[in-house]
Amino acid sequence: MRQRPWVLGIMFVAAVAATGCAGKVRVASATRCQAHGGTYDTTAKSCTYKASTQSAQQTCQSEGGYYDSAADYCELGN
Image 1: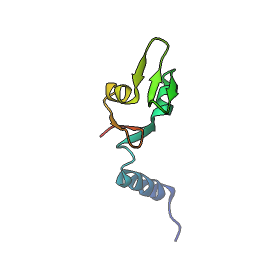
Image 2: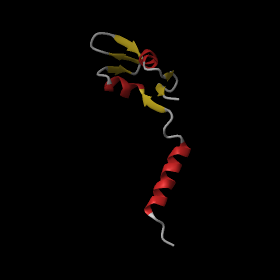
Image 3: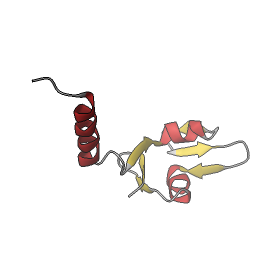
Image 4: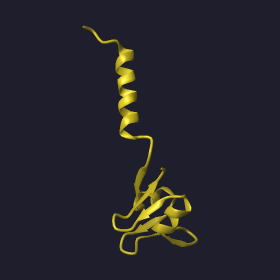
């Protein structure tokens, strides 16, 4: 029996929805810092921008995220 392409498409969408891919996003603090034009200091866990230095926690929380200091990640989303 031959499956139609639309059946595979529906199965793919259902699988993506079931795994929660549209929920939370984890981004490394160094990646976030560099994306915003800063330089990341892994020892101090802080990001230095041209005019000021902010902690990874401050930048994460300013975007509405949850900062996990043990893993050094910012979690955005649900």
